[in-house]
Length: 356
Ligand code: ADP
Ligand code: MG
Image 1 (cartoon, rainbow, N blue to C red):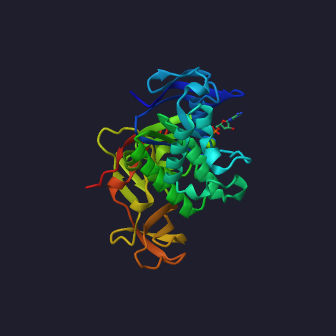
Image 2: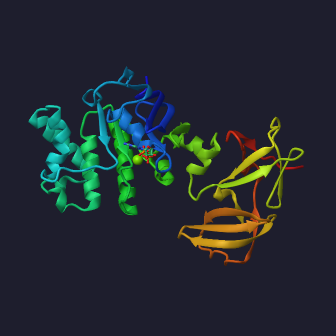
Image 3: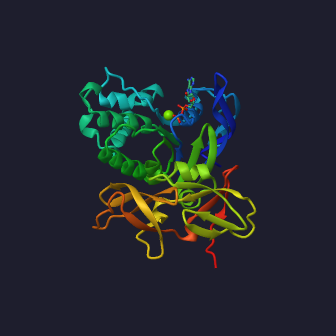
C-alpha cells in the first residue's frame, strides 16, 4: 500500500492544465520531494491532495482509501501551505495547537503534542510570543510546527524554506530529515530548488509544465536520469546540454569524437554532461577559452568555449586559484560521462563509447 497515490489526475484553470494526467505513488515512510520549476504545478498537486482543490479527472488515494471527493476534514494530512499565515492574535503555542483544537483533542493531549513538536523545531522559548514579535525564520518554524503537530499519516510541505537565509535553511533541512526518520511518517515536500531537493529526498519526482517527468530514488535520478528534462531540472550548476547529430555511429562535438552505444540508431540527439564531468586541466584534453569564472569557496565553476560550444565545469577548489578569464585551458571529457538522449522524445538512450 502507498501513502499517497495519484491515478491519472488532471486539473485545469481556464483551460490550461496545471496538472496533466499525473500518476504518482508515494512510498509509505519515505521522504518524497517534488521538484520542478516555478508554475510547474507543485502547489496544485498538493492542494488537490489536501482537498483545497477538486480534480477535473483521475483519482487520489490516501493510505489506500479513495479520497478524491472526500472533504478536507476527512483527509488525515498535516499541511504546511506555501503561503502560510499565522493567526496574529494568537501566541505561538495557540497557533501550533490550532489544528488539534479543531479536531477536539483533550487539553492535556494538546499540550503534550505541542510541546513535543515545538521541541523538535527548537521554538519552545517562543511559545508566549505573538507572530508580530517573531523573525521571518521563526514564523516559518512555527508554520512548520503547526503542520507537523497532528498525528497525520502524511505531512505535506509546500516549499517551506523559500526566502530563508542559507544557514536557517540548512538547519531546518537537517531537522526535517531527522523528523522523518524519527516519526516514520511520510513526508511529501515541494521545492523548485534542486539542491534542496537532493539534500532531502530519498525519492524524487520531477514535475514540468504539469506533467510528471520522472520519479525515482534521488541518487538514481541524479546519476542516470531517464529523461533529458530531469537532467536539466535536477542538479546545480545546471547540466550541459549539447544538440548533436550522429553520423556513421559517431558523435562529434567541441573537438571530441565518441562512439554511439550498440543498438542506438537515432541520429538527432541531445547530449547531457554534468559540470563535474568536464575536466579542467586534463592532460589529453582539447583547448578551450575561459569565458566566465566563479570562485564559490570550496568549488570553482568555470565556463569555457571550445569550437563554438560553451561548456560549464565545476570542480573542488582545493586551494588552487581559478584560471583567468580569456586564458586557454585544456578540457577533458570521458566518453562514459556523456549521456545520450533522443532529441525528440527526451528519452535516455545510453552513454557515449570511447572510439578505438
Ligand atoms: P508551482 O507550485 O509549481 O509554482 P502552481 O501549482 O502554483 O505551480 O501553478 C501551476 C499553474 O497553475 C500556474 O500556471 C498557475 O498560474 C496556475 N494556477 C494555480 N492556481 C491557480 C488558480 N487558483 N487559478 C488560476 N490559475 C492557477
Ligand atoms: Mg508552489
